[in-house]
Image 1 (tube, helix red, strand yellow):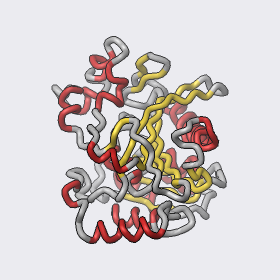
Image 2 (spheres, helix red, strand yellow; image 1 turned 30 degrees about the vertical axis):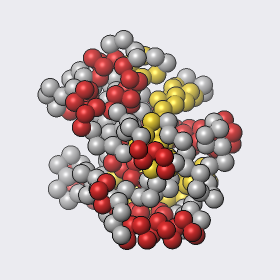
Image 3 (cartoon, helix red, strand yellow; image 1 turned 180 degrees about the vertical axis):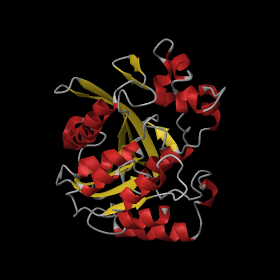
Image 4 (tube, one colour; image 1 turned 135 degrees about the vertical axis):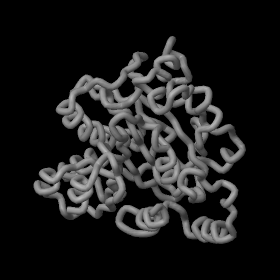
Length: 308
């Protein structure tokens, strides 16, 4: 599946314009054919990363129209010197514990600690599989802006729960952005305050699609000069949406808004229902739908709705 995704987005059009010049592209293909990345095979996906090192940075984007702040992660292709830099720690997605009591809160049963009895952030710092480098210098090999991917997490997860996917895409030449959806995310921090789950279903369904579109606008501003690291580096007119479970539902909802900047989508185990599929109007955007026939959470009805 991951090789299909890589081929769909990195080597095809319209969204998959390879940001490398022909010389670098040729060297990349030769390097990959010689298994030069075999020592970095992910123990989650079984796939090697792409030719780029991966940088990661955290920003908060504030939407004044909704009085809503979004703690947001951006993964991006990084300079080669990052290869020998320390990898990002899990706790860095939690603000490094700067907010008093924030690590204890993250380890609570209604937050990160709910994933498994006895799990600690220190344990995750020591064994969380990651390849990104915090605030690494962006890669300067590329002659064209990087296509953008916006990711939406599932209910009870948060923006860093799927780094096997977000880092993988960034290693192949994409900028990937993901926010915590406040009230739905398992754990987030906004304006120095910890926010745990608690929003109603109606609130989440209203907010999540708007969050993704707001991120698209924010990334357009970053590429336009709001952040020198990304000035001129992000092709926001070549944007793909992707999300897991409730994030897949969110991806479908955003596609229905028909933003012309959105050119493709990947829905992973989307929690859409039959009535949503029947009302679908957007039929032009290429979509990859990923399902599990033995999914015990979504079940047969959701899978059938996804197939529609």
